[in-house]
Structures are given as structure tokens and as C-alpha cells.
Length: 154
Image (cartoon, rainbow, N blue to C red; front, top):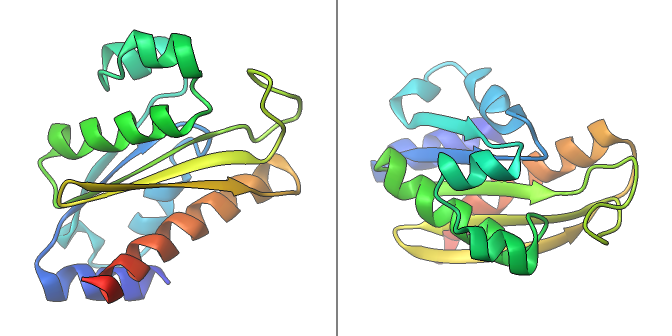
């Protein structure tokens, strides 16, 4: 899938960035395993703590206080601010609960992934199962697939 993503981004002359929380950099790592990805992937940021989401990625404290970091609102803000921060065509964000226990009242496996495609932001609520590693991997795979799906729509 990463090869397809690289080809589609290159063909369309688009750039990509990422803001990751529960995935802990796995999305960026997965991309950079692909030779040639540096032509389209500008970089990513891992914002694991709420304070870093606020201080570095500029997710409003009010969003975090009202909805929590495991929320569509937080994923939306992460994708919106990431695209601006990196000056990319597309950004993707990942936030959620990979376990092992409930977080902010959200069950293990509840994940929000947002894709910001030229300012149009779509947020996806996912419910994955398995170990922490399996949930993180499923999140990354889903994010890549959703970006590729957007190319089919545009």
C-alpha cells in the first residue's frame, strides 16, 4: 500500500505530513521504509502527551478539556494544524486508545484518524481489536488506505 501511496502522491505532485499519538511514529516509520518517499513525505510529529498536542501542535486546550485527546475533535485539530505546520497538501493524524486499559472513558481500540486533503478534513472513527501493536498497525494501515481512497474521489 505504501508504494501505491507514493506513486499517487508523486503523480499528483502532492506532499504529506503526519501528526501521531497512539501510533507513536509508526506511520512515519512505515512510510520511510519505502525508497523514494522523501520526494513526497515532508515529515511527522509525535505528540503523545496532551501538553505537547497543545504546545507544539497547537490543539486548543478547550478541545482537549471538553472532548479529550481520544476524540474526533482532537484528531480534526491535529490534522488541521499539522498540514499548516508542515505546509503540505495532505496531513493525517492518529489519536486513540491502544490499551491496555480504558482511557478517558474510551475503550481499548477506539481510534480517530483524520485526513486533511487540501483543507478538506475527514475524520474516521475506528474500533480495532488485538494487542497494542495490532491496534497501532491497523491504525496506520487504515490511514494509508483512506488517503489512497481520497485520490479515487478527487
